[in-house]
Each structure stands twice: as C-alpha cells, then as structure tokens.
Amino acid sequence: MAGLAPMDRSWQRTGLCRGNHSYLFFPPSTVERKEERERREHKAKAICNVCPVKSECLEFALEIREPYGIWGALTETERRQVLARRAANV
Image 1 (tube, rainbow, N blue to C red):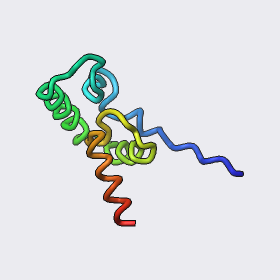
Image 2: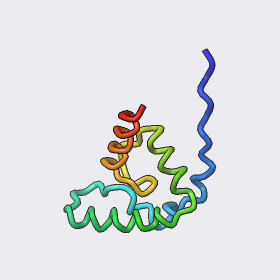
Image 3: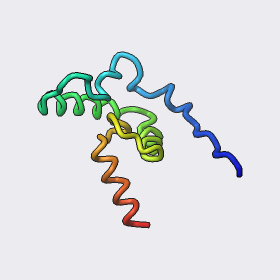
C-alpha cells in the first residue's frame, strides 16, 4: 500500500495568525461569554480576511476536519456547513 503524500504546510509560515494574535483564533481554556466569543471571532476573522494564505488555511482545515478555532476566516460550525454543502453537491 502506498503511503499518503504529506501535505504542503509551507503556507503556515506566512499566516497572519502567527505570533501575538494567535490567542484570538482559539477559545480560551476558561469559560467565555457569548459576547466575548463573538468579539474574539470578529477580530480573528478580520485578520484572516487580509491574510495572504486565507484560502490555503481554509482548505487545510477542511481537509483535516480541524475541530477547533478560526481557520480561513471560518469557525468550527461554519466549516462543518461548508463540508455538508460540498457533500450534498457531490
């Protein structure tokens, strides 16, 4: 059986989510109120929307079925919806 080709992750080095902003992209380990979550997600999505690797990021998250965080400007729920639409169109 042939092994799977490793995914190219070189795009991750240029993601704007790296560094000081990384905390915005994942929920905190403590309880987060709805308003706080919405504010955090809005800030994260604003960064994603100007990121040069937004589409690569989103496709990676969809491919690996990433269950947490903001990837390619979409939340976990939004990514599940994209996958469901894609499956329906197959």
